[in-house]
Length: 260
Image (cartoon, rainbow, N blue to C red; front, side, top):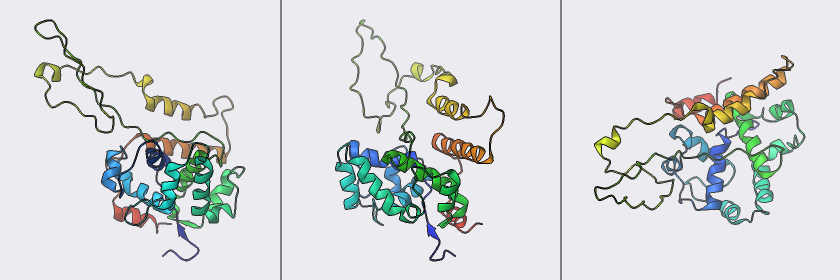
């Protein structure tokens, strides 16, 4: 049972939450915002509810998913106004944390202690990862903010020459959010093998290579705090890059809240 001194804190991946905020600023968002709409924005089905709860915790959407006036102001803020306004949103949502620490110079242990009053305890590492990502976006902590969730573009067949020698006209470029493979694809085209992209040139490889580069190869030794911080970074990047085939159900997620 959660007592008055134990409060819920969200633990969605920061790229998922930030991609929604940035989407409103760059284009638009459906209203109300639902789990189905989030999946259309390339957020995996297993993370949609966590993302919605995080946006609600920040006071950006109400219980029905409608945007709040705060979210509207955040979407309309200029590039210079945006970090300060987002910082105010974060400070209000995590006001208990900010009464204990200043994230700009807090140690990992101090941040961990500041989150001990939040539930579910089993998700504290993910809570802190989200908090860090939001603070970095607002300039409240050093470090580059996480990249938004990117939708992978599906390959379309290359134009082929027609019998009269003329090339088929190129189709107009489509919005990546709604891009799909054309319905009419010839059998010969469909049977063509797809050349695998070298793993070393993929975005996933570059991201994970950056994490691995933080290992103390030269010293061959590190502190427990450094090791814990590195493991959290690995877990956060893996959660961002790879979708779970068996995401936790709502019941399992609620059970996590009461797990010691």
